[in-house]
Length: 243
Image 1 (tube, helix red, strand yellow):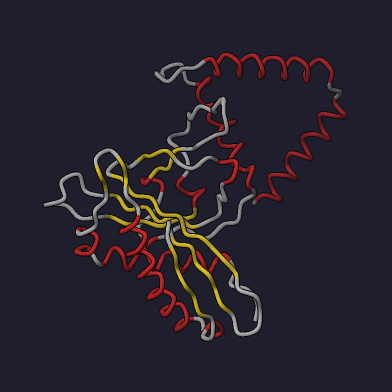
Image 2 (cartoon, rainbow, N blue to C red):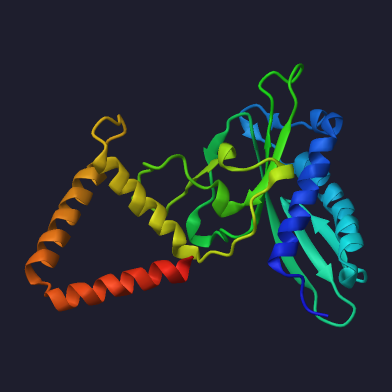
């Protein structure tokens, strides 16, 4: 038997989120905050409970994992998979909760952007509205908009509930390189300098304009037609490879 693959961990996360969604009464009993501080303990405990139940559903679907046992611990959902003949493995499902759809995310330097994320959007009026729980990979939920500013410290991308899908219509598992997030900031920078009507302005925009101008002048003045053809072919190959 081999280790549980990441796409199965993701599926386990989705099933856990479904169970959380189905148990509104238990979510409503959680103490979410204490003054200004968020409390994760009860949310984590409840999520761990349903992760264990979700694993039973996964084993019914994938009989190959029938002998694999799991244990879950807080904070978040820290899972240990115990196999009959190989060493235990550990995985994490990150938990977020808020009354706001957009919240600060984790510092990207140590972040695994492929890990599953369960986000519980809490009702602002807890007497009349329901809790909405969504699940995606972390990178699916990252980003405030398409004009995000890159940061002058280690980036801490916004987590955006609206970029996630309902658990019945979840996004497919996609494995991304850690530094793939850099491309988002690059595209956002170009979007900002192309749109004079946006209110979000920064010194970064002036810097990007200068970088763009210098690159274009350097490239246009010093690149031969032969090199231009080679660069164009390489760019096309890279786009095809990514797809």
